[in-house]
Length: 114
Image 1 (tube, one colour):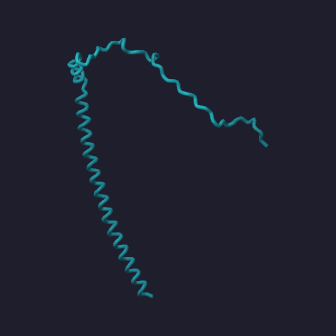
Image 2 (spheres, one colour):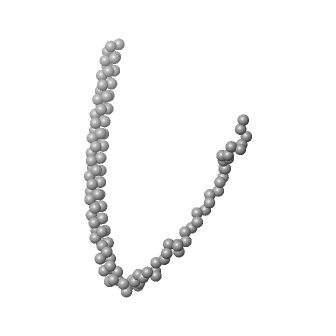
Image 3 (tube, helix red, strand yellow):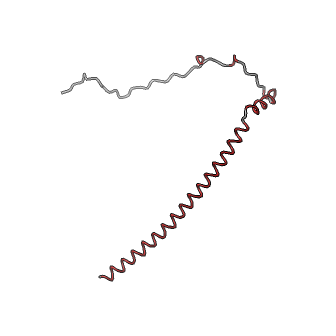
């Protein structure tokens, strides 16, 4: 009986060692994947910073003003005038529809109570 118990213990020990070996390599692979993803995120942040800087450079007011002046006739732009703007009172906001009450609940104390 002891021999069987020893054999089962050795088999369980070998199985646990194999399992822990597999888990170790899976954990290392997950850590490497996370590290590579972290590196990709850092590169994406750097690219985003460059794109934001380019966008800010291209949208400087002086550049846009020069482009608008250069293409004024070709685009058929009109100079802005105060008469082109309206008042807030002139805006027609849509009215919100009232929701129907489907299951009314009586909250008064006029009901029959024992």
